[in-house]
Length: 569
Image (cartoon, rainbow, N blue to C red; front, side, top):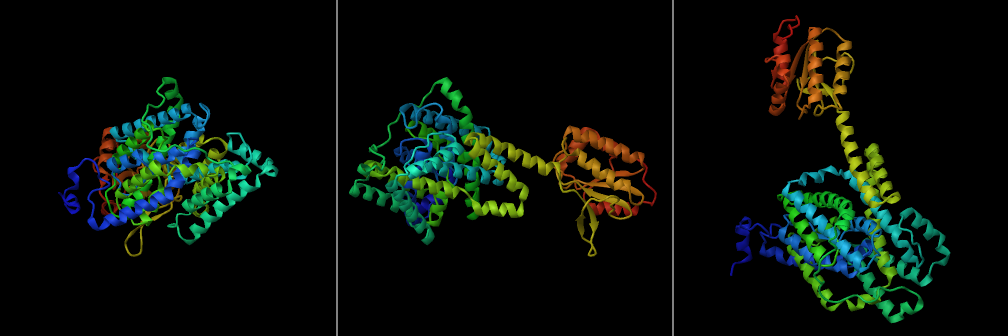
């Protein structure tokens, strides 16, 4: 029988288990302990995520079985934990509540269809090598989006924590209804909620390794059973089925698929951004290879498994990944251990869950939502990047005031606008020599010169239709004042692409410079961009001898030339 160490010698023989192999024998105990820790901390959380999704609470446990295990088998990340997640659960619920009653058989089948569509999108993204799309939601926008989701989730739990009714599906209206109903709050229900919150907060203040949620849930179950809280007006979960999930088809109607395609696309974007960011962070931490495309296979397989096992979409979880890492887990053996523990719970321990007060579970979910509100990150953003702070706030407000799905749309638009803002107003500069003889950048000012008769101008990003006006404005400012200008040197170190509109503008600028008897020179240009300029005919306009490898070479050539302006080529 081959040893564990033997597997480590040839891990790449296998197209799967990249997150598990190589497996060091001395690491096995740490992974097993981390898996048990994740089960203790994560089981109450996934029950809460099922509640957020509008699904029966037992389906949260189902996400810890096949979906989690399949990612461990097919994914590449050794650290990413894939299971139920608050953000994707909230997106799902926002869509399904318009199509079926939460918790109903049709609702569950539609949730399965959403998971199936999401899994298909993930696998299509893998085939098309679209893993790079993970970069299209900036950290700023993701911060705002998750903050909005956290606020929405927390507000949604307040009625159950207080024992009042607030039926509106709209977050702002629900909050208003909850405030109006405060005089009717049920005292014993409020006491249960506050007790759960107190236990969880106390555990967190000591150390996050203490399973505060598990302690609070178990305590609430015991109190409910002993004091018969249901008889005193406290709502409880009721019967929770025991055993393995039934394998069955999700809803497969064309009409339902079209109705959920936009929701699945939104979930796909969040999964891609959140999972890739988390996996990349831990791969960098341990200097391990990072493969978004391979992770897409694991995420797709996990969601398809969710579709056929009666549960809902799964996602890479930053909090669960952190739990495993803090507990010493270093491979997917930890998540496979969690799956085994969840299996045991499903087979023998679901009975006591029937006594769990709804208020206790609502309190757990409330704190999950509150934790998504990254106050520290938002404050730091306000301090260092006020504009990006505004983008994050707008995204969060869209999630709360409109819907999670609309918030995704706003998040994508905000990311694109943020990117365009940076590329539209690049940090252009003029290069000058320092006293020590090194190049340094200075702001573009009217009449700026690198030295008399010469300016070396660096454009800060790729040239395209939206930012060509910036180059023209800088060119006019430089040539409008100052002494005679003989050479205008465009430093292209930051230019990665020149589109057709920009090429036309550049040709016109070269002609204007030649009319003023100013020679146009290019330096530090990447080879592909050089080929682009040749293709556009700019090389012919500037002259074949207008290209230099470095600003220093251009400066030497200028110094060696006569003081008269070079004639245009």
